[in-house]
Structure formats: C-alpha cells, structure tokens
Amino acid sequence: MNCAQLFEPTAGAETAVGMASNTLTSANYYIMQNLGVTALTSTDKTVFLNAQGLFFNVPAAANGSVSVTIPGTRGRQQSITFASAQAFQAFILLHELGHETGVFGSDRNNPALNGAFSRDVLNDCFTKNSKGQYQ
Image 1 (cartoon, one colour):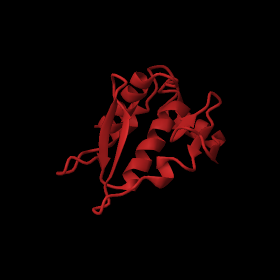
Image 2: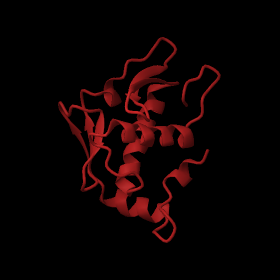
Image 3: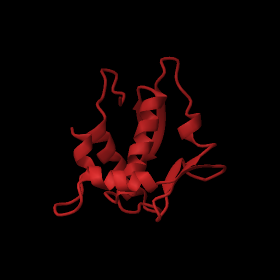
Image 4: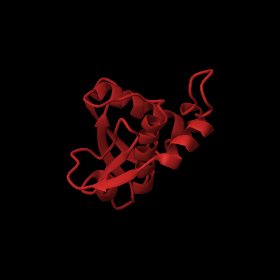
C-alpha cells in the first residue's frame, strides 16, 4: 500500500508533488445544492461537493462507522464500510484528487471506471481494521 504512489504520474511527467501543488493552488472547491452526486470534478479541475450528499450527511452507526454503496469495478453497486465519517470523507477527497491531478480520467457516466478508481484509492490509501472497516 502506498497512497503517494497512486498519484504519481507516468514516467517522464511532472512529479506528483509538482502536479498536486500546481493543481491545488489553482483548484476551486464549491459546495452545491442538489448536485445529484456526492462529489464531482469538472474538466477545469473544479471540485463540487453536494451539500445534501453523503460527504456532509453520511449516517453513522452507534460505533461511529459508516456504510455506503459505491460503484464496483463491474459497475454494480457494492457496500463499503468505513471506520468513521472522516475516513469516508478522506476517500471522497482522494478520489477527486485523482481527477484533479489527471491520474484518473473522467469516469462520468461510467460506473465501472468510477469503481476501478475508487478501488485504487481503497487499496492504496486505506487499511482494513479487524472489523473489515476501511480506515
């Protein structure tokens, strides 16, 4: 597992730190009403978070864990449990960072590709605790 390597560009391109700092210094984040999805990154690298979406409103279990459904690598919905709402929020932001830096291409209208990008973030940036929850 190496989260930083996930965001490394291909050989010969800028370093991930250079890409991220160039992108993030000019990135714009907006909280939108009724966005229709939890988050999205537009072609100009602007990130939109849905004020009514799970990023801000994910329901937590008594133990603090949160379960959500996300597209799987075959495009079908799959249930994922995070140890906390903060871990889930980090997952969303890291997925969008992949789009911002250009490491992930567009996955709009392609649930299987969205699921593949999400799986990369889960595998490289999170571990599972003894309860099988991503943290």
